[in-house]
Length: 298
Image (cartoon, rainbow, N blue to C red; front, side):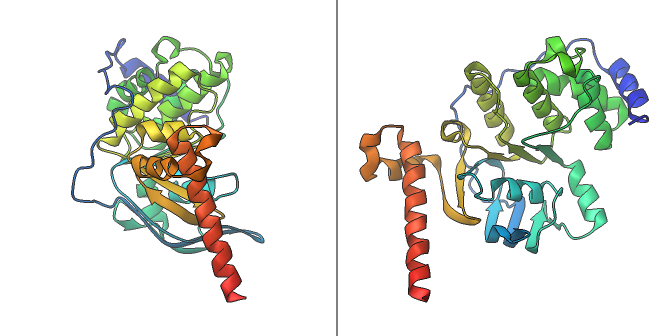
């Protein structure tokens, strides 16, 4: 860490004093698919085991540019998938390709990390760092050139609404502000792939609306994967939904198709919006299919 502070101080001096943020799209305006599918992430037969527990069981998935919602109950395998894609965990089996390169060696992993943005569900930071230093340190870790790092830090912090707190110590921030600083460090390098694990935890309703708008803006050119329990966030901001259950893909489609599934669900009288009911119906259908297959094998 000792090497980081001089770099951060230089980055701070190089950064412009003020930055005007371009307005993003209106919340709820999901970008249209671009036609031809371009895969930026390819997962084949991905298996992850934690001792005797199978977190992911032979998962096959492809992701392209856009905002992809990753849903599922606790223990479904969402965080395990995000951690493998973020290169912080190694799979037990299967193949992962990121931006056209297999993540199989140190060189490939290092190159991928420079093009990734990652926000874990729980992330660490030095409380004595300012927001500028925290985000700047991540820019330094990603080998961003010093002549652009300062401006990139200010831009990322402004995009999450913390421009007025950029020189505040991290320990003085509220929980929601810390979360927004975490989002800023994930986008500071303008990543080609952005992985967010429960990004809206701790954000108030107004901040969540602003975050959805940022997601939509990023999804026009970036592959964004958002793991969340909040179905409404997926319904508003995502172009595609992947539902995991017990380490397997239980459903894949658009938020609109999930809502259609919810509209025809017999449990509509239980309330909730159609996407939430579709989520429940998809889980029930998957579990019924697994039970039928298991019973037939016996």
